[in-house]
Amino acid sequence: MTDAPESSAPSRATPGPGAGGRLPAAVRRRLHPDPTVRRLAGTTLVNTVGDGLSLSVAVLFFTRVLGLGAAQLGVGMTAAGLCGVAASVPAGRAADRWGARRVLVALVGVEAVGTAGYTLVHSYPAFVAVACAVAAVDRGAAAVRNALYAEVLPPERRVAGRAYLRVVTNVGICGGTALGAVALQLDTRPVYLTAILADACSFAAVAVLFHRLPRAPAGPSTAEADAGTGHGTGGMSGTGTARPAGPSERDVERGRRRNPALRDGPFLVVTVLCSVLALQFAVLEVGVPLWIVQRTEAPRIVVAGALVLNTLVVIALQVRATNGTEERSAAARACRRAGLVLAASCLVIDLAHGLPGILAAVVVLAGIALQSLAEVLGQAGSWALSYDLAGEHHHGAYQGVFNAGTAAAMTAGPAVVGTAVIGYGPAGWAVLGAVLAGAGVAMGPAVRWAGRRELRARAV
Image (tube, rainbow, N blue to C red):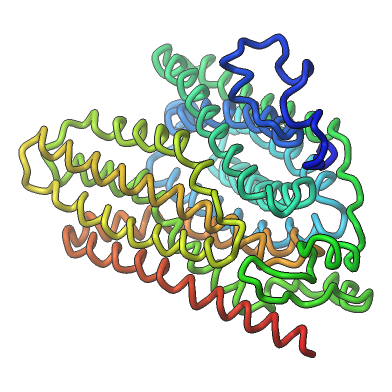
C-alpha cells in the first residue's frame, strides 16, 4: 500500500495531477482526498467489476456449461462456504506473522489460478475441489485485506476509508453485472468461458496492483503511539476508557503461538452479534426474492428493483453513516439502531402479503429502503468495533476471527432466512426481526464489557 498520509500535509488534501488531473471535473470531485484510499479504490474497482461479472453468469455457467444439477450445485457451494469459514482464522494469523501485503498477494494470486481452473473442470469431484479452494482463498483474502487497511490507514480514518471502498465496491459490481447481462444475452459456451477467464484476469491484475504498491511505513513505537495519539494499544478508546498498555516482547511472542482474538471474550461476543446482523444480506438476496415470488402479488421485476434501490442507498449514504463511529460507544449505538431498523423492515415487508400487486410492490420497496438504511448503519458500526476492539499488534488475528463470523452468516443465512420467511410466513418474519433487534440492542452491553476488561488488564 501507499504510505499512510499525514493529515498536516496540504499537498495531500486534494488529488494531484497523477490522481485524476486529466479526468473530467465531475470525476475528480468524487476522488477521495487520501492518496492511500484512492489507490485502494482503484484496486477495489478492478476486483469488483470481475466479481460482478462472475456473479451474473456463475449459476448458468455451472449448470449449463459444467452440467451440474441444482442439488449438486447447492451441496458444492455449501461445502465451499464452510471452507471459507475455516480459512479466515489461519489467513489472519498468517497476515500477522508474514505481513498482510505479502499474504494478500499470494492469496489473490491463488484465487486467480483457481477461478481459471473452473474452465478445466470435467467432473463433479473436480468442481467441488476447485470451489472449496476458491472459497477458502477468497474468504482468507477478505480477512487479510481488512487487516491491511488497519496497517495503511490511521485509526481515525479506517472506518471512513472502508465506507468509501464499499461505495466503490457497489459501483464496480454494478459495472460487472452490466457486462454479465451482455454475456447472459449472448448465452453461448464460449461467452461463459470468457467471462470466467475475465474474472480470473481481474484477480491476477489485483495481485499485481497489491504487489506494486509500496509497503506501509513503520509506525511509531507503542510507547510513542500511546503518549502522542492515544490510538495505539495503549491510550484511550473512543469511550474515554483507558486501554491496556502495549504488549511486552514476551506477550507478543505468546500471541504468535496462541490466537489472542480467540481468547478475547468481549470481541467474540461482538463478532457473533455482528454475524447475526449480517443475516440482513440473506434477507435481501434470498428472503425478499422468495417472498415476492411465492407469497405476494407484486410484479417479479420488484426483485431487481429491490437490489437497485439497495445499491443506490449504499452509494448515497454509506460514507455519511460512518460519521462519529470512530468512537466505540457511537459504533455500538449505530449497531443498535441497525438492529431495530432491520426489525422494522421485516415487519413492513411482511405486510405485503395479501395486498394488490402495485401496493405490495410499494410496501416491499419501503421495507427494502429501511433494510438498506440499517445496512449502512450496521456496517459502519461493525467495522469500527472490529478495529477498535483489536490490539494494534494483532489485526490479522482479530480480522480473521471477525471475518470467519461474517462468512458463517453468509453460509448459513440463505437456509435460515429462507426457512423462516417461506416456511413460517408472518411468524417467521416476526421472529427474524426480533433476533436482529436483539443482536443490535445487545451490542452496547458487549462493548461496555470490553471496556471493563481493558480496565482490569491495565490495572494488572
